[in-house]
Image (cartoon, rainbow, N blue to C red):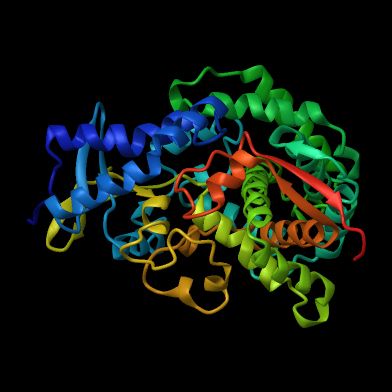
Length: 435
């Protein structure tokens, strides 16, 4: 019987909680808390997390390193190969439906594939992949999604803050996911926000059962009428335990994260004119790159620099072996995305805006750069998110000059910070004199 994986000492366990996991919980893994996001930026928490992981590697080797909190055993992943293994061997033996994740997501999507165990998981995954056209570069309704993005972003002409931009983006998302009839259903988004705020506290969060029932009932109405050209129109309305409508909350949730990535990207482009120029050129010559490769690479680079999925969790259903040592069944493995995405000892472009890395193969190596995860649980809507977000940035870059507020411009003018709070960013969108 192999010996157990190394267990972090009490001081090191404290450092993991303080410097790595604590900031994830504080910022809000499901819905960002703006004030704590500002504090996280001031404290440069992602720098602290990277330093902590490097210290653990020196002390314990490649790990994973076990540490314990009341009622559970966790393992912090330190080595790139272990990241790939955990994601490739999902859901058996490494389940995506961890206790922590189920406790959080049950607040607003209790039947989503992310919190479903086998055997039902495979059928729900297939349901999502069919609706999202996961294995196609462009969704069957992609032309409609592009039209919606261009319509909603066609008349900015103002200085916007994050809240202003999120309102515009939320209208866009509701039309794409649910149809034009949901465009002005701000109550639906407000209900989802409240449920996500509860989900930040996982199983300890306040349960709004009546609110959740109202939210899911409203979604079901949109699914039942399935407006042509919407994502729910592509959903197979099979009866039984698969709950097609129950998959839709996660689509809305994921699009909100895409909006954060887009807002950060616009701030970067407003301070890096050369990068903006390549996207403008592509927008004006679509025949050269019909899938908006430059814009799509820029979106993915924003997600690399500042992952919107702060932590990836997997839970083992059996004892597992790691380099001759073992982790007991039930261990919850923790992958902190930013630790790998911004490790300047492994990536020479770690702290630069380098969208070209997504076009020349540098992000395809052994080092884990995983903005959409990977393996059997990779984001099934990756193609839809990239289409809509790249269309948005291409449309904006072609039509507007971007005037970023001085504070943000100073933050992004040199080496890009590892922690970047998007909430206070303000951007002026001024129509170009000529296109």
